[in-house]
Length: 102
Image (tube, rainbow, N blue to C red; front, side, top):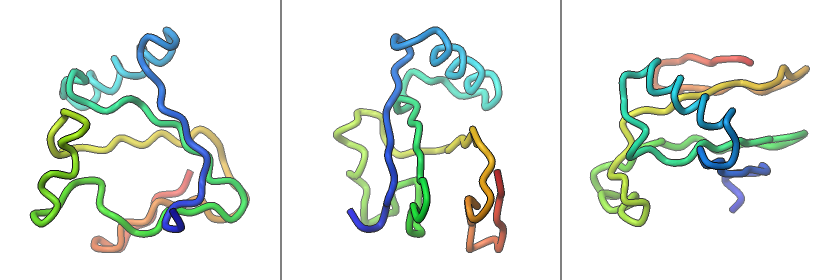
């Protein structure tokens, strides 16, 4: 899709002890159970990569968006930046006029 230019991989807790530990820490940090969470996703946007503005949850007219995942609608998103970049790289929240940089 043109709205997202990146390389990504989904990581299961069973894949590696480090993945399981990150999931455990997300649980501790948020107070939410990872039982109904999606797998961790690692994304590399590279040079020129981007993700168009979007919502990380299903809006009222998209109620069934997460049915195939068996998780229900998303209630939280946790981001970890794993590298610094020389240009770009911000996650922008336009409604609150905020950008977070790695």
